[in-house]
Length: 589
Image 1: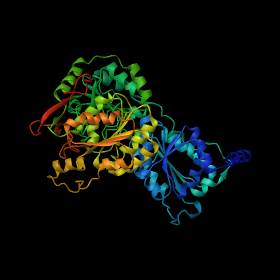
Image 2: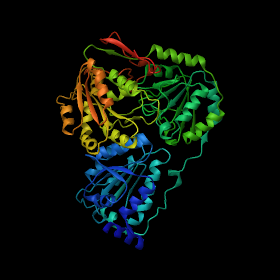
Image 3: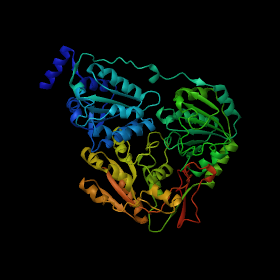
């Protein structure tokens, strides 16, 4: 009764406190889930959240909150939201906010702040969250007046989701959370350029003419095709003009991996056939991709025979790393719709046949050693047993690259990974967000013994809320990618990359009543994957893998594509296994 009376009083006077106003704006914008960790400076907001219909997931570390919000956003396309208190709570969000900025993830971070009267006095748990977050957000604000809450909240939500998405942050002082205001509706004051789509501009005629002349064209597709929901139009263009497609790490799923025109991922650890096709192409069109240094490793060498064209909604990306010959600025859906209308149906039989030959000559390969489990085989087995339909979230390192190579994606938003920032610890909490956002799909984390220990406290979160996240943990007793580079470039000086003392992950899971198994023999692999796939609850499968296993192909940072190092049968022991990703009806052997 007291809560109801309180609500009626507020309606009668036409006043609400800052926290109530913010919650109203959040609800009106469809926010119904958030991840957070309370503390002193954000308690008034949490007290109002108690009466709200917005569901809150209590994590065990603020970094878990922000990565879970990212995972939710990546898997659903909706706004992800995380909450933390002031000081250390806010600073613990910084890594995830930066990650969201690098990967264009729509995110709203809400942080508590000390009362406005003591800002600048080094009060308990005070820090300049606003100042720290300026370079890593699309929008940020320090609220100083309850009258601004509705406007600032709406601006933050709008900007975070508009154009090229990204993170927004609102720093919310404790006294502003409780202060009363009669300003209950938002009237945005920011310039429309921050949220309205730009008009398409660029030389369409020149682009279409260049494409028509091309004999060996490629489409270079990045995460922007997924973020901008343009993947269907990408496929339409590829099929209409008979153009093979390669993707960035963030673009996986934007074009079906099993399509005959798919080249999979290109770049540092991309497929050998994609990398060789880039060396041979005479035209490339970048769609929602930014020529990052993991794909265009050597700027002067990358696609040196090709006319380069680029479409992006963010003009700042044009010519930032790689000079392009033709560019169009605009929303990818609108640009592709126009291109698909004007491009003529074309057959490039000779080029497609060449692509097919490159795939046959350069399949993904690894050796199966008697008695040991290879991670590539484990991931390929997971792909077969889930029929490629699961949502896969990864941490960062060797396992990330093996997952990108061997778990093929035919749909968008089933692949979640930290691309631009390369954040270890991302995968597990991101999977929590994905599982809550996509309850219709099985969600798996593919992680390593190093990455998992950065956020494994979130085992408590999946146990508390009964979230069915399934964990495939590779344990090689090393920081695997660091070890690989130390072996190849630092004469086997494994400086601080050995994980001398890993915990018993199975025992840790037992403490949370989470089913877990450990396997280390190849004969145990099929049953182990079955245990994980068939589990009705969260579960963990720890797989012991060889410490010296490497990711191939590989192009060293800054090297030329012709310097790609591929799997070498002569130098690797065991029986070679080949995986042809465009043959879903085959065994893969």
